[in-house]
Length: 494
Length: 142
Image (spheres, rainbow over the protein chains, first blue to last red):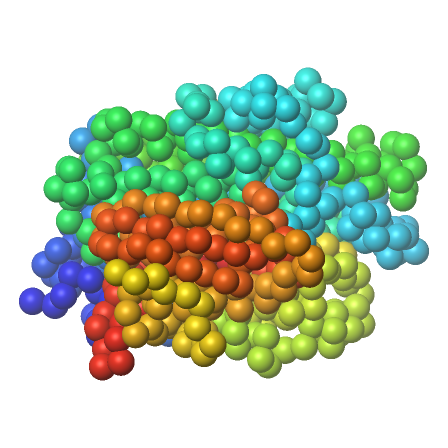
């Protein structure tokens, strides 16, 4: 029998012949592949993307996930998948509620890392003379970079309010509009968050970081809407061809990182106490209804709410920046398209193998992508479905999609979250120079503001898959359909 | 167990990982492995300490085994950086068994820290015996 610790020493390689091709865009690793697998793995990929997935340990990590107890349906792997730690990035799993498990490791450290898109009626052609100033103003107003402190210091009481209220906290402060909240996943606030379940250490890390982008792959970007594919949906979203849009990608900062760190550590005891056998210790989990499981869920929700508030604060700073550069009305006219989470565990109901089941859906590097009629959408979006925001790499296009009803049985209503890395950070730094990359991107008309040149090199477009190929796969697989394509014109990175 | 202090020679190397950072560490014993893992972490982020007054802190940690103590130890150092802006270049492991760690670390405020690390992970973590002592590979979420 192959070893359970699949990605450990002497890692088991998954070969193409281990996959069964279900359709042009769907592959399966059946449970017969490994005796410890409880569910199969479904991989959404075309011929090229499956080769990318086979190029690192992502699929081995997916098989590890499929060995967790209490899972139902299958483990869904998105076309932007890449190797992570524990669950691969671009992975989705569903555990029965209440009999199944909840896993902090399968959500990851950056709880509710996500993307927000704002749409502006300002035309790109008329904005060209101001783009350099806009990039500098956004860089100045939106704190970014390693160790950069927050723009909105919080008292202890206020911190707890952020944890409980999420983006709704910002409404009382004048940093949000009702429409922003309406157009945010979960309306910007997960019910049941309990800041008391987050450690003092987590609060200390997060206290000074609200309203910051952070570093790594987080960014703020100004785009032009290059092409519209669904004019009716785009009009409702406020997206106009030839006009500007803004993307904000960040998460729960040190607060979420520490919550996950604390619970991954605590759950090392829980797996022993509950007799849970793990393929990888990063996938620690506890029974959903156990005191440990419920404490993590309440703390995770606090971090998720912090992240919603964080992106809301950055949206406020983006509006302030537009106002400074384009005049007093430009800030208000920057309307929210949507805000979605990438790393989260959510309690949802799905049709799974003919049965309606309540499950805890863990998405890591994957977004929710529900179809038309979903009651959690604002009324104007309900006829269309949930917007799916897919940022490309810096320098390449991004996409706005809509989830489909059919997707709910394909991937528990989930979609890809970006392009997906294909080159290691180490190799990117070795082969790409940050200053040259910036010069090349600026030659293409993209204004770059970055705190670190090696950091910029790590995020070079060459380090990522082709995002449009990823989007073609999710559209052909029936997961989502296209609304608009965006092209970057200014990028702010830490 | 006698206390173990920071050595002169570095015994760690960065290895390839698609999205995050990974590095391999070797040590002649468990305490040296822990010290090398800390030095490797500090090296990867390009830490430099400010000159001037020095700060000493005592660290006490509990775990279920060597691996969980190693993760706790490195995450503690990350926390001390992020919450208090401190880094340490003199690391003394005063006691280390399978479940407890006691260390005294001396350093100063950091004046350079080039990379945010979200956490040290347990991904495939296993301390292995090799001919020269012990070896472990750590994956960092960045």
